[in-house]
Image 1: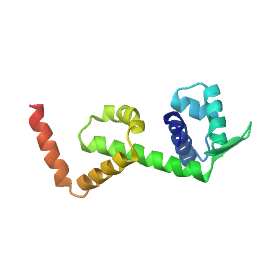
Image 2: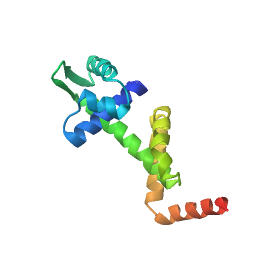
Image 3: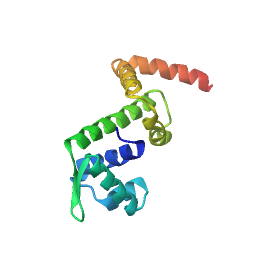
Image 4: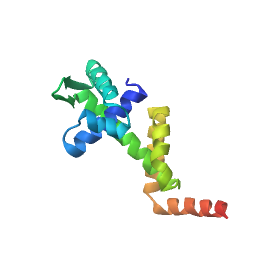
Length: 139
């Protein structure tokens, strides 16, 4: 199992490859606000643990194992964003809140949150009912 730090890197690499077709050390460093040397060390560790294939000065690609984890991590992130939006968290807080909680929830909890998101999305009146409750508390 990857550590939370490894998950951050895998998720970022996955997102970059999906959006740009490649991921460079400099892109990852910028996105995660870390030094390129830190990225290089983590990329070497991810290569050792078979999440990606790394060739010095040539770049890297996710292995099937790394891609599967990357897809799951992106799903988790997007699901938590959906959940926080549904329950009325201010847009400006959602990204940071997700970053703060995503590594601290079990996959069982993520699955149950997924059920709840589906429950609300399947009937917009449920979301409207929640908003009415929230409006009453804001007064």
